[in-house]
Image (cartoon, rainbow, N blue to C red; front, top):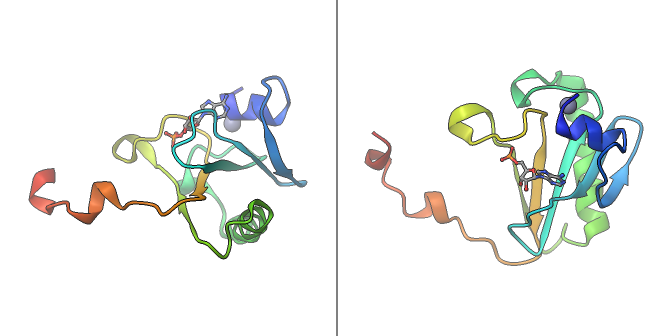
Length: 118
Ligand code: AMP
Ligand code: ZN
């Protein structure tokens, strides 16, 4: 069982934010912003590549609710999913990072030159 499946099954403790029959939201252990929450489906998918469209639609609504519960829906926030090797995905269970609570920089991309990648 993967790390995040163990969190869903409470074999590893987490700081839970919200849960329903299909999704689980919990605080990231190493926050990169004042608010940094991870949202995962309870069914294991390795990455965003694999989630069915219908479940993704429901996950979008769940994430909107999480942002409201966290009080960042009006101030703004960012949703990120790292996918695979180039995306820098460390945990191979689909997850979305919801980050906010402060003005976020667009550091890696804002002043990037595409040539730097080749
Ligand atoms: P990623 O690099 O997109 O795969 O992100 C994995 C995220 O999981 C990182 O931000 C980690 O800080 C976070 N993480 C790893 N282990 C735990 C844990 N036990 N509880 C909460 N967050 C975790
Ligand atoms: Zn899993």
